Length: 256
Image (cartoon, rainbow, N blue to C red):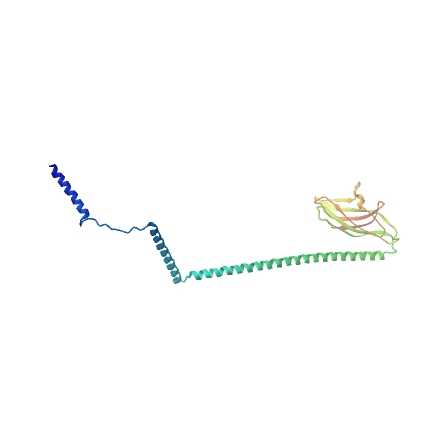
């Protein structure tokens, strides 16, 4: 019994072995072994050729559609060159404009200086005319009663708040010209402040700087100085007096 079972197992093993090497055996393919780096190189070559072919197809399609890459690049280069030329031209124009503005500024400055000089000359001319008229009046007053006069009283703001500058010409006329005036200038200032009228007389009593109002002349003397009023007050008029020995010898009033 055991021998029969062993024979059957042997028969099965032999059939399986014949099926592997007989006609019914599975097909086996034999291939040549290729190293991996040759395969990688072949893959890269195929990809490069494919990309080049795709680029050529893309360029061909753009040409067919009316878009040439070379022409576009040439046009872009031409545009860049044109932009560079325009920037250079703009820089030159800006330089010329700056030079023109500098020249105009110099001309404006020179013109303003000329205008200032003309105004100064006109003022000097006016003063000379007034001096001439004054001395003509002095000459015409020869032989008349002796006395003193105040001429050309001017009062104007001095730029600082509440500060004013005054100018006047004191002169002797008629009579003997060798007589001398020794006295002082007195200012009577009328002003308006806080809705009220007020009056100031300069120099004030016990003023340590009252000597600046003293004058001494035989023929004439120009007098100028400054005075200060409270800030916010408005000067309405100023009367200048020539005071000698406590007596007013001459006066003149100017209204502002």
